Amino acid sequence: MTPFELVFILVLAVGGASGLVFIGVLIQWSLRKARPSRPHQIEAADEVEPLPPPELALEPTSELIEPPAAVEPEPEPEQYVAPPPPVREPVRIGLGLRKTRENFLARIRAALTGSAKIDEIYEGLEEALIAADVGVDASMKIAAAVRAKMGNDNRPDAIRAALKAEIATIMMSADRAPADSGDSPLVIMLVGVNGVGKTTTVAKLAARLKAERGSVIVAAADTFRAAAIEQLEVWCDRAGADIIKQSQGSDPAAVAFDAVKAAVARKTSTVLIDTAGRLQTEVNLMEELKKIARVVARELPGAPHETWLVLDANTGQNALSQASIFGDAVPLTGVVLAKLDSTAKGGVVVAVADRLKIPVRFVGLGEALEDLREFDAREFVDALFASDDAGEQSASGSYAA
Ligand SMILES: Nc1nc2c(ncn2[C@@H]2O[C@H](COP(=O)(O)OP(=O)(O)OP(=O)(O)O)[C@@H](O)[C@H]2O)c(=O)[nH]1
Ligand SMILES: [Mg+2]
Image (cartoon, rainbow, N blue to C red):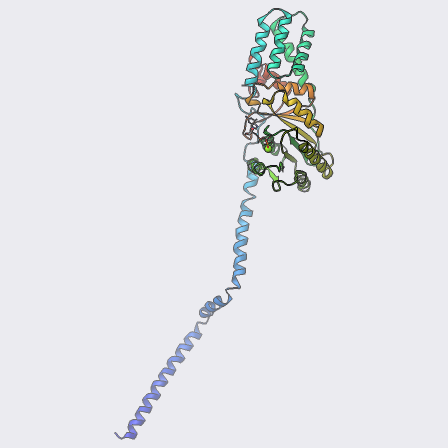
């Protein structure tokens, strides 16, 4: 083979090889072109990644929002309906007036049977009434009225019946129809010295009035302590009521104002205003309460429709001085007697009715949400005398044991 031929063969081989390489490249290129979408999507996905996120971010968010929106409102209506409404029926058998009644009736019995002498009988009655915290004035008045009615009749049963009737008359005399707010929200403000049970009563009322009248807004107008607002939030949660609050130290009147405004806008049935309860001797508290009432009335004329003084039934006669101090600041339209379950001094209710001529609206019979009972003067008197009255059915399931 000549050198010329060798060169020719080499050129052919190189040309063939590069032709093969070229064909290979061509095949690869055409294969890539044949499935363009995947590489493109991958690249596009990488490049467009900043774009999808807004879309993706929107979708999951709306999903995240929607389910709660779809889920939350649903349980809520259930919460409106499902829990058994706070009851009018017996709160708790065995509580209520048991302690007061045992104390009171034992003394009445001793007075009526201890002596046949009229003077001694009525002295004993007075003492029994005073011991039950009916108050000296009211006790003397009641004993004198019974004595005037009975004259020389010293039969224990007759005197006892006359005593019961006299107490019932006093209790009824303070009775008054509750306020009617018409189409507007009924605004109830609760006042009282610290620790008497205002916040607990607001919660109990919220649960009860929600079941009876519909939606409730609670105004956390005790801005004195942060803990008070938190306490109320927990209660409102349990009671299924809305709460309007501001931070600690804010103006209580502004909170009450906001609550009433919201209630008018939302057509809420009831507004309950929880207030601070520092000592009643603090002038500022009284000024604060006046301001709340004033500001609320500006937003809704006629409000607060009810202002209830919460009294601790253990307080005894001090309740009367609390009532007169609070009554000087804001017109009181009712009393809630809390903690009646834990006292033998439930007779203070009689003193309140006699002296203040304002009705007892509710009594607190324990610390739970349902431990609130609408006060019924007749039922109360029946319960007070219950253990001696075999036929007093009405007392058995309520205030009585
Ligand atoms: N046994 C009993 N305890 C009650 C009743 N009502 C309230 N209490 C208790 O009394 C204590 C004080 O109740 P609160 O509702 O915080 O009283 P408050 O008037 O709001 O107190 P301040 O906000 O500090 O003025 C709590 O321990 C309640 O559980 C009741 O009817 N019976
Ligand atoms: Mg409170």
